[in-house]
Image 1 (spheres, rainbow, N blue to C red):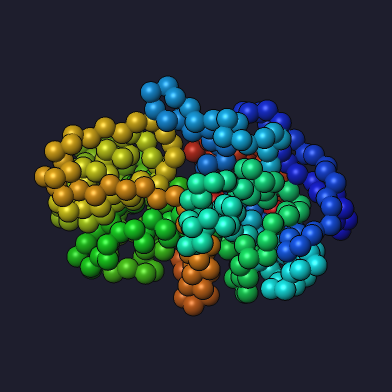
Image 2: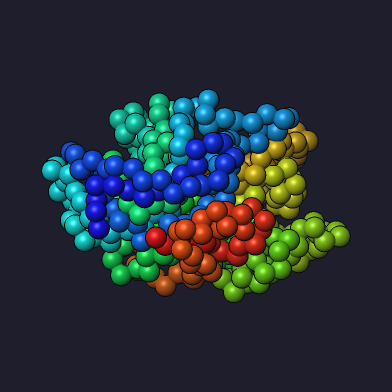
Length: 356
């Protein structure tokens, strides 16, 4: 392979299609590493990135362009691959290593980054697949070897999804209080991240899981991955039906949609002293009567991906125990535009993984 040029599927206008572009690639310097991409998952947030921002409610849109993201953009932040080049100062990885890349890069120097939460850096965002070219390509340049996590004998396609779907689900789960076998945890939205959360929680917690999604195929997949019950949130009296089926004992709810309807459902489902973690980025506004907080002793918090240490922990867990595997739809990288359209239309169960 010629490592002096890279072939990327990028968009050059907000909301525009992805086109194949060839760009020169300089040799890696310092502790930079070049990966040959073998697998790259498609995340629902890529649809928001392509559109140029997120719906903040009230007709307001957060703008990636105003925040400093420059065109063209090469998306793809669930990157798995093989090391093909290393900079002269690299000591921790070697050519031929099979790795996944942690994509949520901050400045690497502030107190937030120092505690391992680069995804929350307030100084700068250097995320692979947004500000930096991502994995919708044959090659990816990773700025520092520390962002690479060896995967050993793990399936590379499934391992690639750990970089977002995996750690996003894992980070949200870890924000819930420990649950017992009598407790229920609601998973609202069973797309790629929600499905991953079902699999992870079923493997690591005694709690029972109720999966909530309007798509019957996703509900069936959630049941196959460890959910004890599954319901359609659009069915008549869904709130009462779900609460009754779970004996009014839903201790926590993870909202992987992040819409007004899903957040409201989650907040109303949990028992007194219940916890709601909002993860999804669908957008809009969420209103709730303020007395619900003290009367239910309700906790609502957000969760944004997770740190590099969480990715290493998740990979170690997957190497230790046989985690349930979410459905994967492997497709050629050249079909990326159709794959994004299918995701937008709700036709994807589990995760699409692109392969150059």
